[in-house]
Length: 500
Image (cartoon, rainbow, N blue to C red; front, side):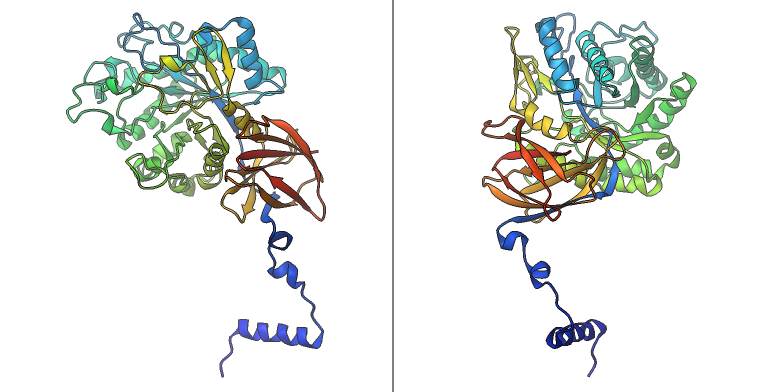
């Protein structure tokens, strides 16, 4: 009779057990956590996955207006607030007791130059956004930290398109050098005149979505409320990565990286040809400074917005450049709830990014044409000059303070798909090991957390719940016992544990 090696091993173990020579802890081997009364989860701070650049914020000022002289759109709302109110919001975002974000996104609208080779006016349409970043940078540096800033071409001026009107669909190849100059002049203004630590230039905002125009490209389709745009094919993205890198070096911007622009979600970046085009062009891949995309999640096969979290495109480029980083440069606040933090879990662990910046964190709702399709936010500014701190702020705070720049994403596991575990290892920063439990279900759940690789044996917790009974409120201290914490996680909650 043939007996394979595994069968032989099993027979040997059985014999040892029968003879009393081997005493396995059968409960430990075969039982679920707490005798099947708790969900088994693990956090491994000694298994670090990738460097974390931090979470961010995006102040959107000019996004849709078709005539800035007649309709000077100011969507972020700072123009309605007094200095005291602005300072309060700045502190809540950048301050020591606030979100402590490390990333900032600044849009670059089409209104800075009326004609190619003409004069620039970088101040008229960006006053409030620049104030927000300027004061945020001061506040950040006052706590001995710094920001990384990315600026995104929201849409080019009309002269850069074949149609020669705002939101024209097709790029005019004869305007290539002029559009490069349009981007570079803004970058130099931000670095040299404002003194901002600009790190990256991003080529486009959802420029892959060719359905936003009629077949003949005869109009800009602005009636449906879309923000500024132009169609960017994979080939056009590759060409501009190479051209921009060369021209930026010529203009003394070697410290600023160029990104691939921002498709609507990682699925489109991965499967619509953008990652493939960069992968096949070794020059473009070598000149790429950062992989960027929006991280909007849409699971299920309901409509054309289908877009699950996927790392396929990122993994492809990292085959040749393993250390290449990736950022989410816009993502929904969803219902400003625990599920929204689960979406961030998906971007971190499924898409494998190094940083996340959500869509506009402060909004003035009447100023978005047709109603904002992503109405969640951290703050709302009302037309009477008041503002509200929304539930989204507190849920976001649960994760931003945990994942500070320079930390490392740590490996986690959970044996319940409605319990998501996120962890950041201190990685020799001044921060402590931190982990987050997201219970996005409709039930309270008992969780066993096994913690390994941390110097901390005690953890201080803070919690936000969907019923708003707790809004980033202290939630007790927990000491490891046999390397574990037993925790009762309320339904619809996010709880963050900071090592002490």
